[in-house]
Length: 262
Length: 316
Image 1 (cartoon, rainbow over the protein chains, first blue to last red):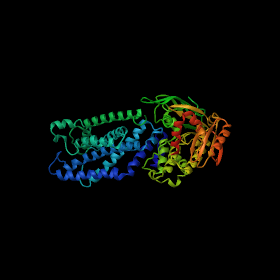
Image 2: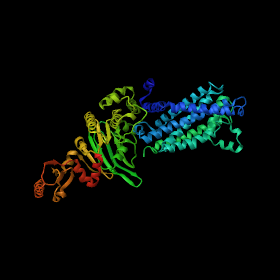
Image 3: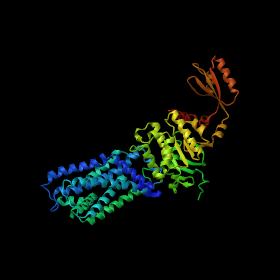
Image 4: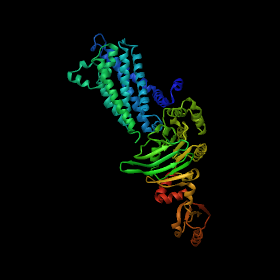
């Protein structure tokens, strides 16, 4: 990291330092922030694949165990990208240490970039760890690696941005937990992590299409199997649109100083 | 464009700040020149912290202009913040890092790289934090956390340093050490702005003082001029177990543990006080004639009741 320190221009050193600090913050508690979600995902894999392996085949030629893995990777990636930016912001607001960043010349755009980049890295790290452990047990092909990367990037950026919004808005840990438990968790579980939406009744299929998490997971899964419930291009447009909308909102909140600079 | 060399360290023009119906600042004007050691005094709710938060960019003024070293805190906020180091009143810290890491991160936020590490180490040494450089912030005592906060405000070598109640809850030894260090910074050319509940500190350290009350500056002058505006002196009497005669109660400023301080407007009141003590057969163990201090000025300006609250808060 020292070499990178020297290469960064002074104008961007603040952003890079904040990004680095956010990385170190979650890495210092990696058991909680990386190892724990990997273990949880593997337990899901073990239990669901054991129970449903011989009962469900979603895509032709794809065992249920293999079908499950991209969904679990994406679910953890999204949840952890959200958790990184939201918990860091809420904690530093409650402890008052956010003032150390607010007193500096770091602009609101740089602030956004630093928190977002750290959230993306944590999402990728958790996702990659789950993938590496899962392929020890399951034969998993990769048909379109670029789509995998694109959806992992867009998904972690979208949830990292949502985490920034939730972190700025929340004044207490239980408000942030409400985002996790009443928004992120239901939307993830109802997005097709464990099933294809084609297995749902028509009404719930239609409802699922209003869930942005569905597009992230479906597009990501396309990268592995070359099969998906809808076109990856459609998913790409929807996810990118949501990302741009949330990024606009987050930047607007940061620029106005909402709940940070009265 | 203002020439930075000749610009005031801080220029505050007609600053208003409203929180709903509350006028926290009512058109404050204040100019602090480079190199000054300036005191900002006032009771709770006077608007000191609001003013400091506006300087630091943590609050936006409802109206008015503020600049630091010639840089407007809104339009040229990056240059303004580069020029300012703020020591917050609360003992805030980041629990994930040790002292050295935290200081290097703080320097990095201001665009400082590894070339600044020697200065960070110097600040650590000067504030007596060398033994604690690798200790997690969580594990530091209150006094050490206070030193680390001061170090954080200095890592980017700001020309203007704001200390918001830096010695609240700090023991005497550490207080002396901190003041010696801050005086040295002032001697080196840094502008120091201090808010404190310890008026004797402001009297000893500050060249100029502003006293605030209900969002306004009610006095702004050199410490010497403010003191000279009160010609009166104080007579301190040590009476042991005995009480002060009732006839002297109108002159009583304070009385604790048998030591009574009488406020004198004229020197011939000494003779009157002594005669009343003789009449009441009260033995005087000790007697001192004392010049009026900043506390007297403060009391006369902000009102005795709020001044007492302020001073009691400082004693806690």
